[in-house]
Structures are given as C-alpha cells and as structure tokens.
Amino acid sequence: MGNNIDTDAIIPARYLVTTDPKVLARNCMDGLEEGWIERVSPGDILVAGENFGCGSSREHAPLAILGAGIPLVIARSFARIFYRNAFNMGLVLLELGDEANKLHDGDSITVDTETGQITNLTTGQKLSSPPIPGFMREMLDQGGLIDYVKNKIKCRQ
Image 1: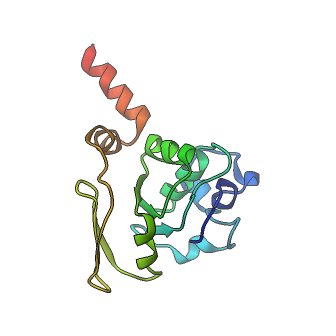
Image 2: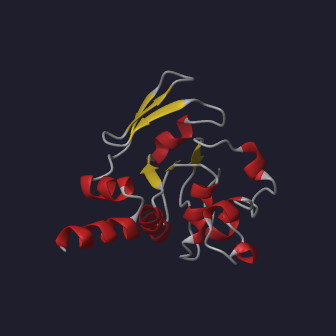
C-alpha cells in the first residue's frame, strides 16, 4: 500500500452499517481498489507506507482488516488514532520507518512481535521494529481492549 491511506479507503463510509468484521472485510480497501479482498488470503500481512490509517477515528477500519484475515500491518508510520484503535480491536501493528520500503508485494516474511524482528524470507534481509510492549501484547493476546478489561474485572471479583 502507499502513503496516507485513510480509513475511508480502508472501509468506505457506505459500508459502516455493521461492526461484524467478516461483513466489513467484504469491502476492505474498496476505497483504493474494488475487489482487493479477492487477492488476500488469511494470514497475509499488509505492508504500507507512511501515515497509514489517517482520517476519521472509526474502529471499523481495523475490524475490516482483521475480518479479511490479516493479523498484522507493517507500515513506515501510522496515524496515532488508528494506531490506538487497531490495538484496542486486536490488530497487531509494527512501525518500521524507512525499512518498510524493503518489503514488496509477494515477499514471504516471518515476524516476531516480542523482539520486533522481521525476516524477509524472499530476500534474506533482517529488519527491526520496536517490539510491542508487554502490556500491549497481553491485551492483543486476549483479543483487544474489551476482552482485556473483562478479564481484569473477572480477576478482581
């Protein structure tokens, strides 16, 4: 993906009639390329340029990406509201800076979110992102903020 991909490109406003990730996924990235979802397979990783997720603060954007089966987005940088919403919804993000330019469509990569290490199996390159802090990994492991808070409340009762 390119730079400045906004939330309306990720999931156009006309599809915001649901919060069901699978339904939203049907039109994920329709603001950029209709039928984009047909090229995606569960487990694919989305790689983008700078300021990914700019625009409105809708939670539908990370939900549409998750519904498409994409568990992780790597970008040069993220819009701050999208960054927070993504983690709240359970979508993993890694900010890679200029090294994001070293990843290309079709590359096969492995990612270790604990260390921030990304290995491009296609080229053999090793890239490094700041690791996800422990408390955010714990929140992601529980499916996002809502489930994280529910589990914290249960533990206190």
